[in-house]
Length: 321
Ligand code: NDP
Ligand code: OXD
Image (tube, rainbow, N blue to C red; front, top):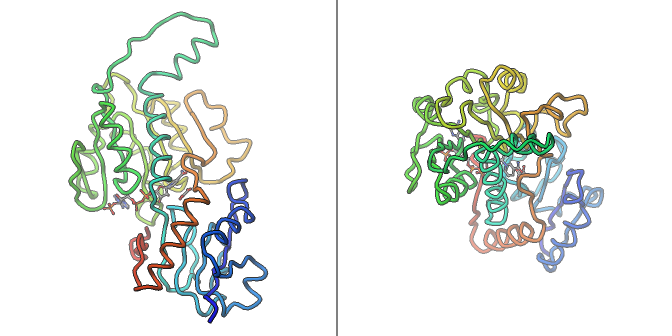
């Protein structure tokens, strides 16, 4: 009997999300399982047992009557959760060392960039001014990570090893060596009060939408060596109130921001973020999903599932992540 097919539905729009590249990788690791792209996948939808997706259009998955598992090809599932017609089968997200390592590189790069006053130093270089500024040790700086999950916990560990004073905030209570752990709404203010560099690695859910706003920025630590606090957001654009970020950068509530994600992506050309002197922006590529790693991850999960029904990293639909 032939194996249930895997439908590959990808709307990435960048080189990394080329459907041809992903198809070749899936065909290499899924052996004799048919890998179908649209429109072929929809010609005989009953054949499809699995779907591997990135930003499919709402309704795309509802046409497969025998679907058993949906694999999201990234860590964040907010786009899928917004699809009211999403079939009620297990939804698996990406949690692999390769992606985690890439995100930690981004977080460490940007924390160090602000800690070592790189915006000031580059500005001085452009103006040919030789005016050194005292550089504090990492141990003088408190970094707070919102989201102590797969990504946040790894970034916290590496930042701690560099010497930063690291805290984390999560929904449930946690204990992580070397990290001051805070959880829930009741401990958010205490977490913010000790945080000079705020790193956001939260998922976008109904509870976290626009959590990065003026009220929250006003509670951050202002009496550390950096003066005004810094925001680094690589979670999702929907977590941030963008007008508040701009206003807070302009009135000094925030000293600087590194932003990888935006409410509207690609960021419109007339967005003030592009040219803001206190903003370092990247086009949502803090941590790319690698087709080689992820196709193997999905193939392994399908094998385990067919052998005994076991799946890892299944999204809790009620929590939304
Ligand atoms: P996880 O699900 O492993 O971790 C999420 C963390 O957020 C958990 O610690 C969770 O708490 C916490 N959290 C969720 N909701 C709340 C809440 N209401 N209050 C407090 N804490 C909350 O996710 P990952 O670490 O794998 O990924 C995080 C996000 O990073 C993704 O959802 C995605 O949006 C983004 N991302 C961005 C990329 C980029 O390139 N910019 C690349 C990859 C991911 P608890 O532990 O208690 O459940
Ligand atoms: C992800 C992303 O969620 O790349 O994996 O944004």
